[in-house]
Structure formats: C-alpha cells, structure tokens
Length: 126
Image 1: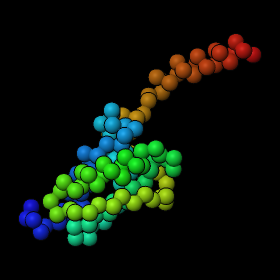
Image 2 (image 1 turned 90 degrees about the horizontal axis):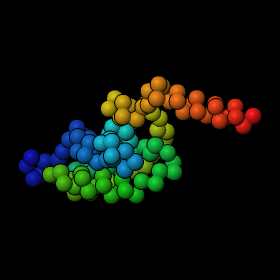
Image 3 (image 1 turned 60 degrees about the vertical axis):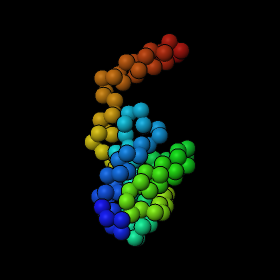
Image 4 (image 1 turned 90 degrees about the vertical axis):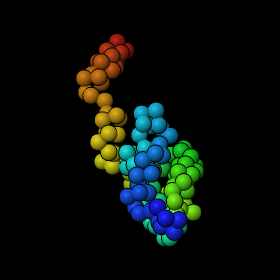
C-alpha cells in the first residue's frame, strides 16, 4: 500500500480479527468474533472504532482501549486510533459469530448432570 493510502473498512475489520477479547482469548475469539465491533470510521489517517461491551461492567475495556489502537497503528496509513464505547445498542449473544457461538455454547446433554445433581441436593435438604 502506498505511504499516502488509507486502509478501507474491510482491512480495518480484518486487522481487528487479531485483537482478542481478553475473556475469550484462550478460545481464540477476537473482538470481531464476539460481535464487539459496531462500526469503523475512517477519516484520513484517523480511525475510530465504535465498540459494544458484553456488559456495562466489563473489566477489560481498558485492555481493549490499548490493544485495538496498538494493532491498527501497525497498518499503513493509520496514525491515530480512538476506541469509542457505545451503550446503545446493547450487546446480545445474537452478535456472536458462528465460531464464537460454537465455542461458547454448551450442549444440553452436558448440562443435564448439573441439573440432576442440583435437584438431588435439593431433595436431600427438603
């Protein structure tokens, strides 16, 4: 890419695929997989990434505010990156990529033993 060229939105989103949500990094889930990226704004060498947090109490917002700019500044033509946290829309599991959905879901048959054990404990205590 020539020195004065700017990356497009697809290039920015592709680069964000290398930024991992700290709570899901061990599963290889990026901020894109988790559906945290709401919108990307490009204004010359400046990029603003609007993100939606999975919860308003997300302890990793500080980490994302560092790792997103660090990754995007490695792209040719990007000089300044702002991470903007949005409170609307609210994050829901519908935002998960198919990869994230598969990694984070637990099949019902794996949950049944936990339910049965809880019911047994409750019956013993009654």
